[in-house]
Length: 224
Image 1 (cartoon, one colour):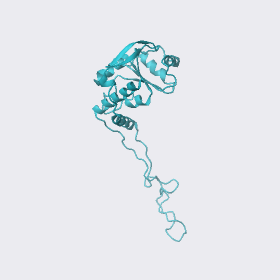
Image 2: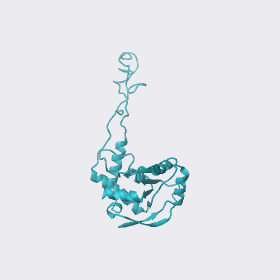
Image 3: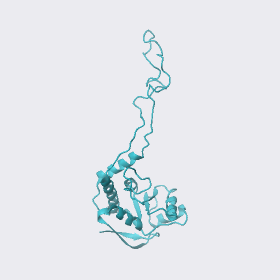
Image 4: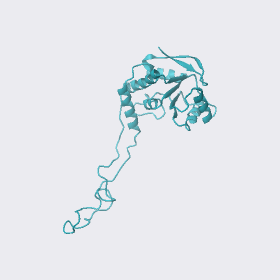
């Protein structure tokens, strides 16, 4: 059973938190983590980029000048890709970039990312984090107490209540910080990537991972 220190909101150690080895202390599978991130970022792509080919650009129906005897290069349309205001050759067209990933791979990827942060010593467990007001100074005080100022930190909060929404709002004006709600750690809807939920990309993209005690229990419940 893995163990980490348990802190209060002032950065004081108040005990220890046990973590299940099968979730927080496995050998990280880097290949599956890469596949999850590729799947997640691909599903965020809008796929709406579009250009017009020479057939779709307005105009250009008439040959600009005769084929021969002008001394100029031969052309058949002023909408050729080599002309200014012409069509685009091999340009992007709307397409579906979405990908699918097996449920077991998603679970393994999240476990691998959590284990990676635990083994690095970058996993912090806090008894609870609540702010009465969504003020940046509250978040800066918390970061100062935990010596996290200037670092990229991901806060994972348990459920949507006003106190936790205040924490989320307090992070928005500080570069490198992000707070997400983890009611479901990214494995509830297999056909969609949750915008607000525990995911591999956010874990890997931030140096420190801060979980509340309730979130640890929720993760262990869902990923057991």
